Length: 146
Image (cartoon, rainbow, N blue to C red):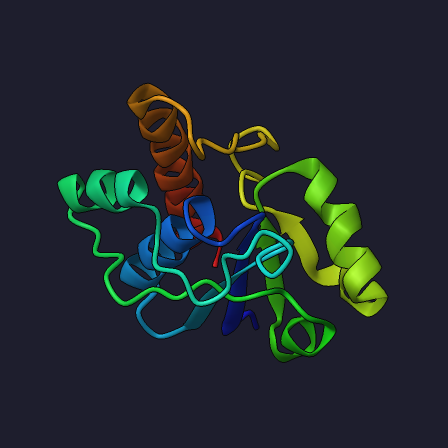
């Protein structure tokens, strides 16, 4: 049913690339990509994953090489069966971009107590590690559900 999954965060350089890569590893038969809510506004379109996010993912056996940040668009929302966002507030932002996507947008942390996954960007290594652990736990929970 959900064969096309989009993982969304703000800049598409920390959380969503990690979530995308983890889900790809756990669900190899599915089309999984990621995008950001304000990638263009932040000047991050086309940028690679954040260095700290890349390092922590690599330490956990996940490769973020080759990632390029992209802006979430209404067209992109239409392409996917399921859109997973990192924070509750992102649900409304996705709906403002593509109102028809509201019914297929859920929290990445849905199955770990509907938990938000905090943005570690420009924070400490501990913040990145904490976010990665939540993303890993949530991705495993989604893999079991899907």
